[in-house]
Length: 65
Image (cartoon, rainbow, N blue to C red; front, side):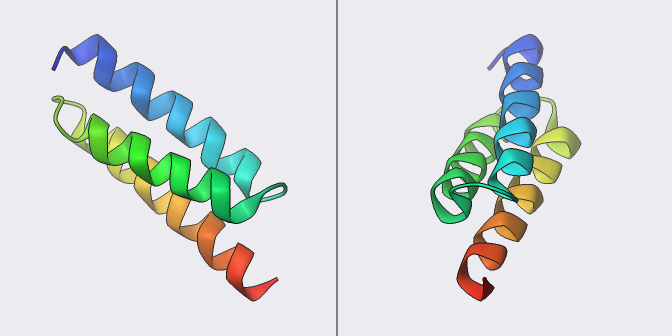
C-alpha cells in the first residue's frame, strides 16, 4: 500500500476515534480500529497504531459509559 494512503487512513482513523470519544463510541471506535488495521499494511505503522489505540479507547469508553 502507498505511503500516502497509509497517512490518509491513519489521520481519518484518528479523527473518527476522537469523535468516537464523545458520540457513537462503540461504532466509531470499531471504525477507527478497522481503519488502523487496514493502514498497518502501509509504511505508516506508528500513525496507524495511534489510530488503533484511539479506537480501542473509544470502545472502552462506550462499554464503561
